[in-house]
Amino acid sequence: MSNLFAKLEYEAFRAGINPRTKEAQDWFRKKAQSMRRVNRQDLLQDEQVKLVNRQNPLIGSMNMFFYDPKHKETLPYYDRFPLAVIVGPAPNGFYGLNLHYLPNVLRAKLLDALLDITNNKKYDETTRFQISYRTLQASSKTRFFKPCYKHYLTRHVKSRLARVEAPEWEIATFLPTADFEKSSAANVYAQSRKAI
Image (cartoon, rainbow, N blue to C red; front, top):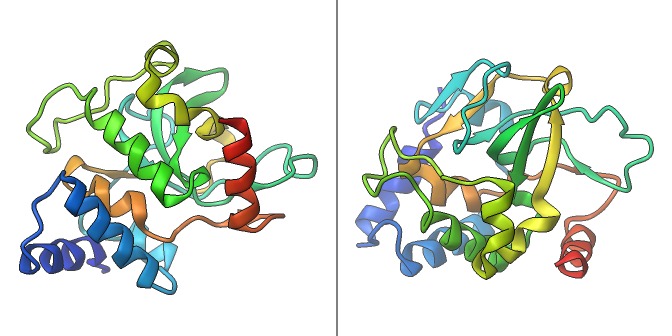
């Protein structure tokens, strides 16, 4: 069983990094950039994530999963391994913010804004993002959300949801796990900047 999250948490602790700080985000971002590849299958088995039923995604939670879009032939590009914050229910699925659609700098800014709207400051298994489409639209701090906002169909989720709890949000946000099909990450980021 993988323990990548625990390993990175330990390394950050040894480096004297305080969680949920700008310093922590910078440290995890640099660490992620130095990593070549992450085995996505192993990551879903990591001891720090909780596998949950894809039929009942928890609003405000962060999740990783394999996805095969219904209209993949007509999409200009898509991510086969989203890292999505569940925003709410949608017809035949759910709405989610897939953080992979942003380059790391903008991803960090969006994560900062999201950390301001959690249900508590414990940063444990009870902590959730308190978001809706309306709250995302209402704040200039979350203006980077638009290219990330996706409608996921439950029937096209090809794995259980791997829920990432609050202590690991920063790590998951910067892990190089995006799996873009039909486009390079650089092009996806360029299109996202245009959308913003």
